[in-house]
Image 1 (tube, rainbow, N blue to C red):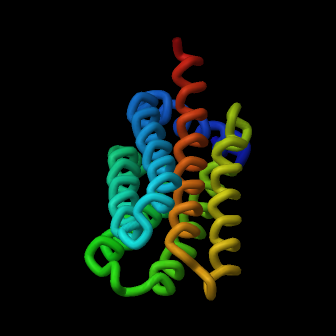
Image 2: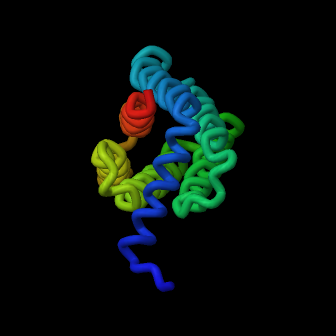
Length: 192
């Protein structure tokens, strides 16, 4: 018996919903840490100035590790590989910032543009995959925020500064954490 595309899509959405619901506490912890890292990225550039690149690097590494933990056991989910690329890119950019802060803002800014774009595209792809699910639009908004931040940073690449990188990274981490957290929270409440 053949299955229609709509039926297959409904089965996929149900599997994703169940996967998120089963790991909702992990997603909530991940979201909280991403929002906290985002708030730190917003606050510390104004305070520490030159040492902010190392701080941003550690925030990216922390965010990447937390997102990687969230991907454990999710290899059958269609967005897995795009999310994995985003995680690896975040950790690599973070490691480069920690290990070579003297490399300069331009190189870091270019890497951050790529990171924001990949992160935004992966979140948009995930949101569109779960689209009929309630609260899918919060994940979509976090992806759009990532793409907009990539455009803003790309447009200001010639005059980039520590505070701009910290501000944009903080906004991206908060949007990602809030979108994922809201989705996980509502799915968790639906079970209770």
